[in-house]
Image 1 (spheres, rainbow, N blue to C red):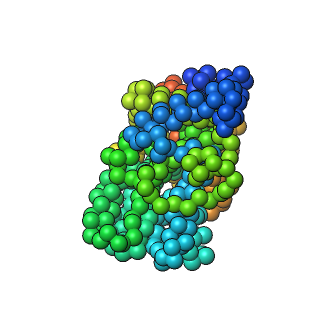
Image 2 (cartoon, rainbow, N blue to C red):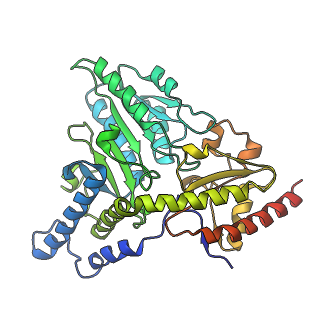
Length: 393
């Protein structure tokens, strides 16, 4: 039986170094950071230290870091918070996202469109899963208040042209007079945080989302960069935490872990990337030897840890289950939509036909994978594909 985990885009294993840092806050340093006694203040001090580490990762001020339960909450807070603020000002607004966003962005936009709280546009992508910039340029209006794009796609790993979007937004802002509506830029960096620069000033973003369990910290914690001065309405109420924007007792151990995780990215990120590139190259070379396949996305414009590949006449869910029996974990796409039997919306947006998209799987590598896992994985994959094709009508 193998023990190969190739589903790191769904969630990562907690790094032992991160676990070591967070353990004291699950045991001895258990105080509520909102309490004024020494036990509570010890917890608050740990939160403050983690906030500084996340701020260094974002290249922002600590006061611009908001801790949340994860990316879904962060994304919802940004999108709904911006829309609700302008609705409270009786403004008719327009917001833009892409057709390949994570459900925690895409479903929010669809709900806002359905309830007519805002006019919504979904920008298409090319055959490689990259946002069509020229289409975005045509869609920006005088009342556009938010553009929300992911930094890199969670299914095919396509890296989006964030700096080009930034330049377009800056040009639009320059055209608006001082009394005009602001135009904000939100980037979901959940998949990108391990591999791409997250300097919010260099990228020109107003909001940036990261999630702990994608970067070797535990589930249930995330961070949101919120630029000073942006207008956003809180989405929940009941406490003074996080500058009054996000009530609820802080997840101290999770926040400490998040701080440790981003510190490791800054320390070991380049080394991790080189290792993953080598594994991915071998993986691609060996998968290419299987007949009737197609890789989805462009390798040179993808994250170094994601391979999305389709097998003709071998259904993806069946491949997943057969490999699972061999002790190998992969995915058929986003973990948040893996219960759906519909063709992947991401692959459909890229123009990939159902006969190919139904046979797609996502292989996502991580820090703890090794090149020695590739051979047994390919052996099990080839056997599963052959078996399914023999069974196919």
